[in-house]
Image 1 (cartoon, rainbow over the protein chains, first blue to last red):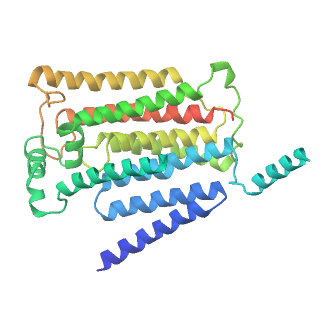
Image 2 (tube, chains in turn yellow, blue; image 1 turned 90 degrees about the vertical axis):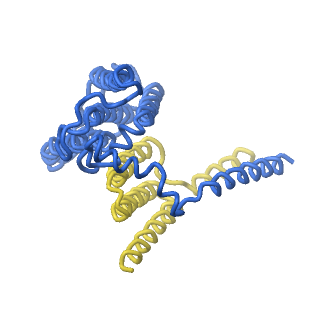
Image 3 (cartoon, chains in turn red, orange; image 1 turned 180 degrees about the horizontal axis):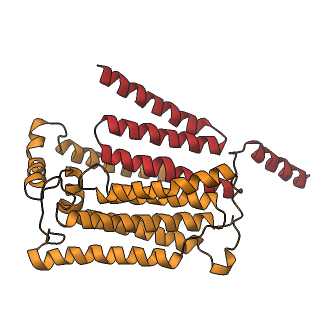
Length: 97
Length: 231
């Protein structure tokens, strides 16, 4: 029973982090939330007695993927911008005027 | 019209996929009687490997592991092909901040420990959880720490290529040795030793060490090319 409750709690935490990663407009926070998903997933693998997969998930999902996404964000833009789109529309309007 | 055709095709595909998954009755009691018992008993009694997952991944399904390593190699090659620039173009690193002195001192102390942990994980792949992929990734994480901390820390690309190629070729050579001596690819050709010893399991330990070197070299190459790519 305790096992079931803990697994369900952890899975719900994971779903929460995933929803946060989708809704967050700041891409840096979204990437870190997806790293948190991987961390919780590796704990879940450990609880479900798959330590090999847990190690892989911890090394690749938490460290490497997050860092590679962060490097990509450093190279591109940080915000999933809405005001950027609005600014572009305004520019188009100005040009058409 | 196009939408309905796509939907129809998807429905047909889904129907057949559902049929396939309904044919395999996962979780039924007779499902447990198949190949699982053979794997469990022969990994302990024939191969003398205490980590059954490793025995399956490297020996019974060793060909799949070779395919996985090849996929990783191809993706690393494609990434280098897209992102790699000529040697004189990648002088200074534009995307990094200089690190503080605490991080410099700390990462200098952490780097050997992380590398040692990675080596431990892939050398003991047939005894404890872990293996080549995990150990290689941990080593790559240590190199990532050094690359992020020290701005002019550099890794020799030629050396990475050599390590990776030699490890890959030796993997195939061991597989071919099994083919010519025992009759099937990646068959065990070495003495198996004692259960729970470091030198047990025949070729499994050697293959996992090679996979560890190969994965570490590929991932370090990926990280290095990504860090040196100027946006």
